Image (tube, rainbow, N blue to C red; front, side):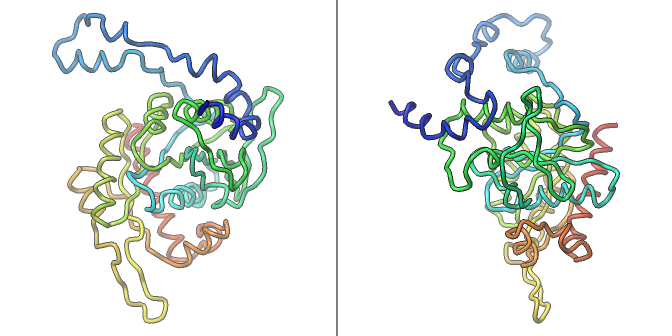
Length: 322
C-alpha cells in the first residue's frame, strides 16, 4: 500500500524519463544475488587482504565508459550547504574559459535535490533522439542533464533507493552527450548509494572535494575523500569554499568559517589543495539569477578564483592519467 501511494505520486515524473521505471517491478526489484560468489573459495590469493579484496569485488558491476565522454570529474562533499553545486557549475564554465576548444558537460546526480536547472537558468523537458536518448539542455555552451528537467520545480521526488538508482542509470546511459572532453558531475552530499553506484559503474577520472574551513564541515570532507580512496577513485584535491569574506565598504577581511581549515586537512591527508573560493555576495546573487559568476562577471576576482580552480583540476587530471 505504501509503495503504491508513493509510486502513484511520482508516476507523472517518471513518464517523462524514458524507460526509467517502466520495468521497475520486473527488472529493478530483481536484484541479482552475489551470495554464491561470496561463498566460493578464493584461489590463488596470497594474503587475507587480497582474498578480501577479491571477495568484495565479486558481484560488482563492470565499469563502462559514458558514450562520447573522455574524462569524468565528480564534485562531491561530505555534507550539504558547502556550495558544492555552485562550485561544480563554475568549475565546468571555468574549464571552458581556460580553453574554449574543450567541450564540457554537466550532470546533476542529485536526484532528490537537483540544483543545476536553477544555477544554469534552464527549464523544460529534454527532447528525444530517434533511439529514445535524451538530448541535454544547453546554456552558456554547456550541455546539462538533471532530474530537475523531468519533474515540476516544486514537486518532491519521494523515491526509495532502488528507484533512485534506476533513474541515475538512465541519466548516465540514456543521454546523448555528443563528444565531450570533460563531464563534470555534481554529486549529492554524503557517501551513499549514488556515490558508490557512479564509482562502480563509470570510470571516474577523479574527485574534487568541496568544504568550508569550518571544523564540522572538514570532518565530513575527510569522510568523503576517504570514501573515494576506498573505491579507487583518485582524489584530485580539496577546494576551500567560503574561505574569507571581504566587506564591500571597508574591505576588511573576516574568516567567518575559520582560516585555512581545508588547506590543513589536505596537508594532513596527503592530497592536493586546489584553491580558495571567497564568500562573496556577487557569487550568491549571480547564482540565484542563473548567471554563474564565471560568465556574468568574467573579470571579477571571484571568477578568477574559479578559473584558477579549473586550471588546478586540469593539471591534476594530467597527473593522474599519465
